[in-house]
Amino acid sequence: MGKPEMNYQQLIDVGLSEDFASFERRLVETADALGFPIISGVLMRGLLQDADVQITSLGNTPAGYLDVAKDLGEARRDPVMAKLMMQSAPVVYDQQTYATAGAGEVWEAQAPYGYKSGIAVKLHLPGGKQFLLGVDREEALPDPGAQLMQMVAGLQLLAAHAMTAADRLLGPKIDRTDLPRLTKRELDVLSWTSQGKTAWEVSVILGMSEKTVNFHLGNAMRKLGVTSKHQAVLKCVAAGLL
Image: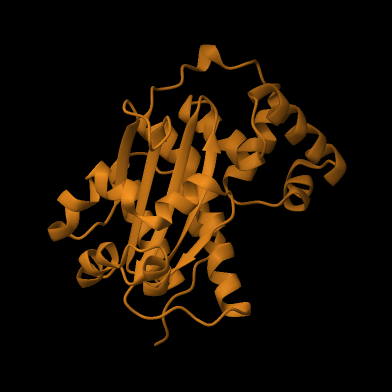
């Protein structure tokens, strides 16, 4: 039997995780479906070089590597972290990445734990927060081409769904009274969207045009101060509106 592939429902489930344990479990399962046995996430408040930076880690870091993974000094020496801090594009790495940066010993220290090649992305959250997500494995990555692009795109999708869930589960709880009032139609559309329905499917279910569905989604996103329908869903879930 072949290895399972990541599907859209897995992404939805990651974003809607009701507690931290299920969130981490779903992240690990989705990363495995992408072809990576290790996944590491960081919710960062401030900049990596700041003395008062606040970092919360998540994922399935191997037990023997936990102390090193939590060492800020090691993180600041890691060229993959340095690249993520300087650019918005995903970072694809292997041993050569570290050798070129003059940090071969950092790769040598983490390679025995499965961190030989991987992909990492960074996304921004409101309030000066950043969410970093990386996947790692021992096997070499595919040569540049369609397969590698598919892996990178898959991680970016996973990060987009995981980001708001991480902020929701690790940050202060959202009080529903702090959210703007949404209309019943806006909530109906968001409710079906949370179940993975497309705008066209929601239009059929609710008996309205697809244009009207997108109108309600746009209004909800604007009121909630988010840039995607998935972030709008997760914000409502966090406040107990869905």
